[in-house]
Amino acid sequence: MHAYLAGLGTTLSLIVTIGAQNAFVLRQGLMRRHVLATCLFCAVSDAILISAGVLGAGALAGHAPGFLVAMRWGGAAFLLVYGARAFRAAWRGGASMQGGQGAAGLLATLGVLAALTWLNLHVWLDTVVLIGSISAGWQDKPGFTLGAISGSVLFFFGLGYGARLLAPVFARPAAWRVLDALVGLTMWAIALGLVLKG
Image (cartoon, rainbow, N blue to C red; front, side, top):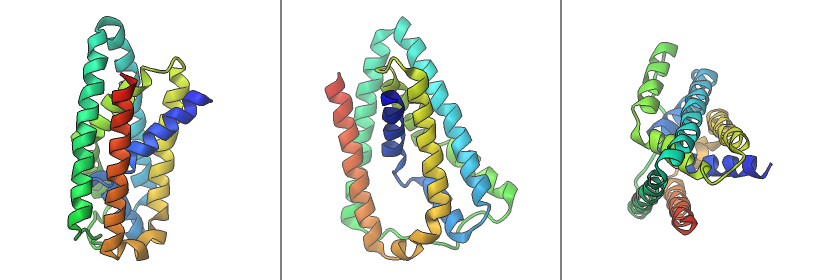
């Protein structure tokens, strides 16, 4: 159960960043277009990538112990930079949600999601690299993996179906500044955790 909760917390802390994929899910939710398909596509894609990361990190750890060290430090550096970008966005402000943007048809929606997910370096870094490297510290890998996947399912379905409740909040630019500041703090906290674990 401890490994499950650790996996759940890891995914939720990483996935909270509003990037291209999450912003698209949020827009689809705000417009109430293909919300089930959108959330399901993202959750299944994450499940595949998270599983690959856990399995890949474990296999490489046995043959090349230095690989996990490099992944940990690389992940920490990425998170520090990503956190700094979030802080800069919070400082500058000006972010807003354009509710009119988004794919109309189901195939168009899935096509955009496929590009935003499988061609997105940040998605690969979060799921395969970061979650994969963090999972190496847990003996109960199935529990950690199930927790990490559960976090993804909870987030995407919560974001997609909860978007209608957030519409009034994200109509104000100040809400985006607060969110960006929280994202920056989260990213730096995870980076510190990776460094201290080494």
